[in-house]
Length: 440
Image 1 (cartoon, rainbow, N blue to C red):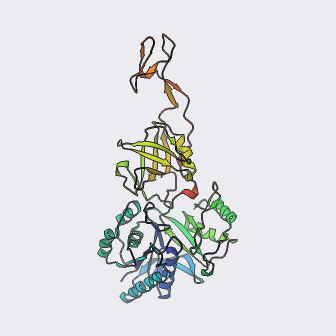
Image 2 (image 1 turned 45 degrees about the vertical axis):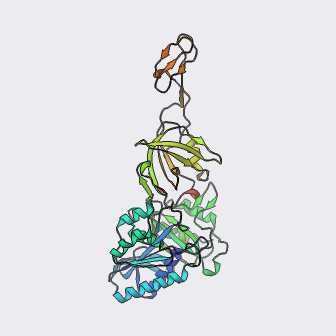
Image 3 (image 1 turned 30 degrees about the vertical axis):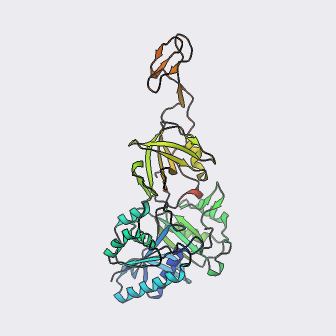
């Protein structure tokens, strides 16, 4: 047999557990059996709108074999470095079977299977499913019965407990084509510290982020919230997200005043790629899906109770949807209020069961007019303000009955200034998959 992929999902629960930690134990198990890591392990985020998603909605995958070629340091585990090799040699049939059995045993031992909605799944395969499976899993709703035939068709071995929903995530982690990638270096606490308050030096994290612009989503200056550390009882100490793996390793060495970590691992991820956004029209946006749509405001924005703002947007096919900018995003409601009817904008966001689109970002493409509005002209005979006859029908004086064309409207004011470029939520309100860079 060739090198073998092992993919995992659904091993955590809302109260604890961690699939990335389980993967480090699978890597340890493989090393004890004499197998090497081939390439970087994967952390793949799935559709963020799924109602039954796990806490971080991520699946993991790693490839094992006999390491060959160049290698790079991707972790430290059990006091020893973890190396990832560029290429992998073949495993015997018996060796592959022992690895699959040992890996599943570690998954079952570590997953909190007594918790509701914790239904671990593992997929082991020499081959990867088509990339279209990943595209479906990150953008729409996929059921286990849809992926099982594709996995069995490539000769994969499937192991599950419970609902089997984890098969979807595990399969997607294998199918991910890694067209766009970022990286995350995750550190873990010693087991005796799990569930106790974390000690992560916020000033040191802020300083590292300032020194290394390649790092992202480290700290939110608006809410003063530290974003590298979770707030649950899981084993993670902190995670450093970066567009460059070398910078993540460098920053790890610079964080010296936080509590000591017990292990770390570097993963290649789809975080920050915007892969969940389907370019298109509102008519093709189904329940629990996300899209990027261009259109024109059908009416001026309206402020809602609680600091939220809504506006109606009509796309290029003539379909109109209500778009919602929620207060917790901090930046989006204020930007939305500066828009005016007729403005051409680009929005990206998602919907749940309802038709409303919850915004993840927006960008003004073109103002409808350099002025805020128009009013009827004064009658040239009576000097009284004329009355509108309706959109596009011109104006008439109520006293002398004289008329003027629509072009006689008098512009007034200017629309409020709008920030240049795209508007993203404050960092603590951004999704893992929210796109980085100038274009969404």
